[in-house]
Image 1 (cartoon, one colour):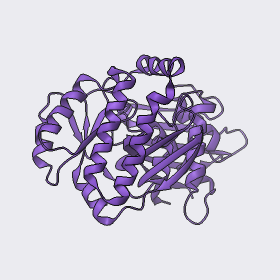
Image 2 (cartoon, one colour):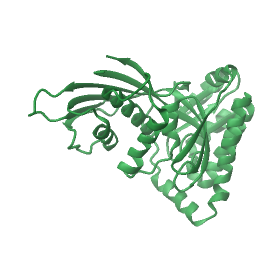
Image 3 (cartoon, rainbow, N blue to C red):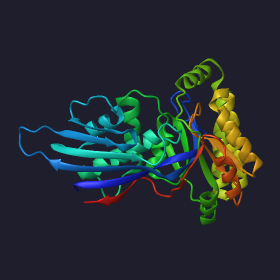
Image 4 (cartoon, rainbow, N blue to C red):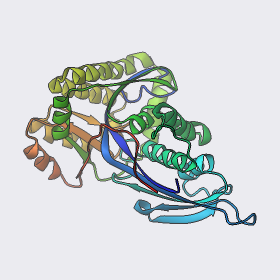
Amino acid sequence: MNAVRVHAPVRVLDAGGWTDTWFARRGAVCHLAVADGIHVSARRSTLRGSAEVASAELDVPNLGERYGYPIDQPPGRHPLLETAVRRFCPPACHVKVTVSSFVPPACGVGTSASVLVALIAALTALAGDISGGGWDAEALARAAHHVETVDLGLQSGVQDHVAAAYGGGNFLTIDSYPHVNVHHLDMASSTWEALTGRTITVYLGRPHHSSSVHEAVIQRLASTDAETCLAPLRAAAHHAATALLEGNIDAYGQALIANTRAQAALHPALVNPVAREVIRVAAGHGALGWKVNGAGGEGGTVTIVGPDRPDELATAVSSIAGVTLLPLRPAREGVRVVDHD
């Protein structure tokens, strides 16, 4: 394969988020993959002679970035991309990679994890290291998580990579971080239709840069009874998964509300003022539930589960100054090839 284009979804409504981390040690998460998320195009050409060195060209139009470099001498402009290219690029070739996102960066929906999953999948396809026309989703999620946490030394939970690799709705149990058990939620078609028609994701107008808040939460969990703080989040994940399997959208909404309250209890700044205004307006227009996506903090996104006819709710929420509705809908499929040569 000389060229490939790959899509990976992102993730919303992560009941139990924060418990899929090293400091929680064990966890439970229920999330929903949504599209349109990340697209990665990759093309390779073989070296013409021994004088040429393997090189990469990275094009990230969302950030206005495009540059080339020898693969073994990454410049450090986009370490996430450069590290994945160095580890998974086919040998003895030039590779051109384009990464585009249909969601704003750093908005709490697992974008970086989806980028990694899609990029590793594309490079693996170029190298011919896939069997049966697809990937091992478990191995792909694990490889992407390894790049973030081991190669780059970043803090990262495990759920975002799973959502990108597997797609659909999943219930995850983490008995010993980073090992994760993935339980795919076999939802009825009527439940999928309800989620497709009722979920509304609201971008709060700015990316979240809340590392100081996150560090404060980690310190609190280290110095207090972490089990007391995290138990409501794990419980919300269990309740959310049960509700989805039963097709009970009302109960699902209640589980998300309980999770958002527990999230705010970890630190008030995890649910920022704009998110609170979105929630207030949504509640006043019949919303069944809501979740501040990801770890929360400044900016980011909120996903709402609306009533049967959510048009009026969507109009009311979109009138809040600075917010934008994102065209994200539940995605049954995980990472997949959309074109190849």
